[in-house]
Amino acid sequence: MVYDVRREIDLARLDRQTSVSSLSSAGNDTSDRLGSEASATGPPRKSTKAKPWANLWKEKRKNGEDYLLAAEDGNMQEMLDLLDSSKKMLQVADINTKGADHWTALHYAANEGHGDILEVLIDKNIDVEAVTNQKRTALHLASARGNLDICRLLCD
Image (tube, rainbow, N blue to C red):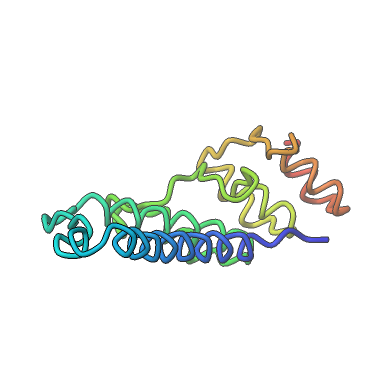
């Protein structure tokens, strides 16, 4: 069975949406129990000040997720664009970004057999010894899938 990070990302988004909606509904229950005094003041307001760094980190996190998906899909150009600081400036994806179960782009590329992606990542000094939550390296994943060429590439 091939692990699909996209399902994990969708579940995380759904989880965040559910927690936000449950918090807003919990606030309405509190005001009903407290009576008119609480409803007159309403729930505490959020600050209206702009938070420029919040959007930066959201974009950086999204670029990291897109980078992992590009490595998994074998989309070389998109992956290189997300790593290019001249195009993404501060939102550039970190080469050692870890996704679900601490998989890096190297793990995804090795698992899917994308040798060209692996060569580029190794040239850009990705952590070749990175391990997943199950203590597996990219070499473990490639050998489990029977990708002998990928195993040779990782051993060199």
